[in-house]
Length: 270
Image 1: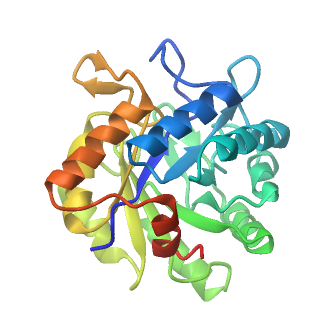
Image 2: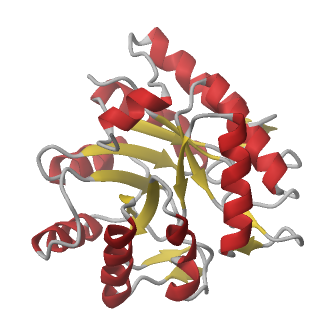
């Protein structure tokens, strides 16, 4: 197996300080949290940013400041979100890709998201993929249900995506695929040959699916975007605490965590 890539999704678009008072919001706080996650074993930071009111934004200037601060403090891979927040336009969502980060997310389908709908029309998906090609940004294919893998394969045939692909299975969102081990096995079986993959279990699915991914040879995403608790009813003190737990479990299972440079080689970024 490759070494384990741990992605830290440290802020997200939906979580507030009412959910967890330790949520990093400002560029300085996000950079500090990213460095702490790097120290705990993370090699990738999945990045959302907030405006001065603490609301989700895709403002390129906020992304630029945040990325610069992250790079000043650590050598992590920065993976920007093109999901933004529910209701944002495709033009808004693509903005941070123009900064040429190493990676960006590409969700390849529409999904119910609790009481909202995360809309990804096929022409917009193609537009996002083309822009990532134009700017030399590696996509992480965000999969909320099985049909999104089929769409990614279609984009490969249209030469809008280059293989090998990297996928992230977001499992347990109300309206998306359930966070079960059976579903995880099914998703992995659907992947095109040579793909790498990680799993982001939402809420209580984070820990068991993360452990399964470690055992199966996949990679793991943790962080406040997906889960604000350390144990049932007990809030996590930091994103780094969630990263450290997963890194510790991996070591106990005989799998070392990847440094950012090792992750770059695994993901084909170098």
